[in-house]
Length: 172
Image (cartoon, rainbow, N blue to C red; front, side, top):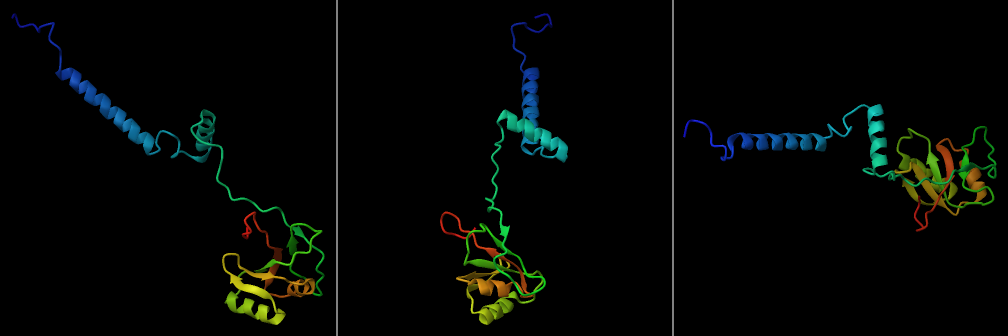
């Protein structure tokens, strides 16, 4: 007509660019949030504590943490007298019981602990499954009090601890 744009025509070029730009910004924000730039995972410890607190209050994170179940505290027993100057401690769960199953924990840095624990088993005629590397200990059962007293004076022994069992009968 006279060179002016038709007021009834829809502008398509400017509108399409605006939509694409908005989508790109939204996509970049989502990627930044997913990578941890917006939720505090890449901040220092004090800022992360504030973010964690806010997340707990908002319900985004659970306050239940997966923790290993702790054993009850062990008590140093005086029921097993030892004839040496510095005996290894005997740790039990209740003083009124006389346990018969123990972990004989070894001192650190012992070369070839399998061979050393075998010598203890043979010397004291212990009922044992052998050395347990995961616990750095010798598992012994049906051990009389006089043998426990004698084991306290062995240089290889760091401590003697009563074995705890869980509800299923497994060692804790």
